[in-house]
Image (tube, rainbow, N blue to C red; front, side):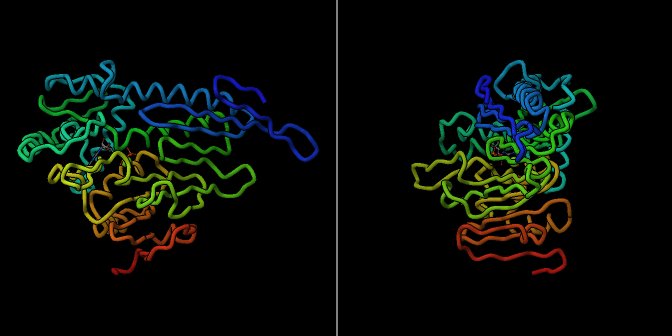
Length: 339
Ligand code: ADP
Ligand code: MG
């Protein structure tokens, strides 16, 4: 085994000792979170190295704090049009679609409100009601104009892609893996898991779902191939205020407060990391009933909801591959019934 800058390269041997393919993994910190990549194939080393470089590139592009990033430029353009990369255009288009499809529950222009709560820095506080009300005047994703190469936001508006950037990044990594003919890969970008193909032995990947009531444990696992498994929960970036209430980083654009519509975690399982990431945040804000309606309308994803009163809800397409690790009342929702 050789080790190159924290990356392991290990030849896999067949039973009779012939080298077949290589497994390569990398663990690093980017986009403010821990990431790990693992790929199997003769070109795994190049695939992982290229993926890591692409992640750092996208981190630069989407950062809200780096003054060379597309997002910084949009946020400091005084209402003028800004030329941006194709990556930014693509993510913003998904964000706009999500905003439309979930009745405004998903809103990238919440950034100034998130900052007032301290969710962007970790210096948490509960802002005064009039501060939130004032900032909400400038939250309106419909005023963001995106064309094929430029973006323009109203002067007072600022955006952030925290709800969707990691999903898009995961899709880009998967593209690189495919270009290198990798048949098996699994990546974890700060809790966003994406898989390519199956495990090298042909069996499905097992992905753990965090227990939102005990984040060091799992409520269950799902077995998947070629899928993204992406969770939004109220146990990440949260704090207890002086009033003894708990507050978390997914806000309801309706009132600028942490979304509290009956859910403590939403896991979305589907092919597109970008869509699953945006959806997990959007459905968390929508709440149980609207999330179920959204799933019935869409048809291209499955979901696992955990409600604040400790119940589990699985959509029919994921129930068969879900294994419970914690006992919890569970309901499976079907596309055709209205229960
Ligand atoms: P995580 O970043 O923990 O994976 P999410 O994908 O749900 O979780 O993204 C949460 C982030 O999305 C927040 O930190 C914030 O940057 C942003 N955000 C918060 N509320 C909303 C919302 N209603 N619509 C869009 N983005 C949001
Ligand atoms: Mg998300």
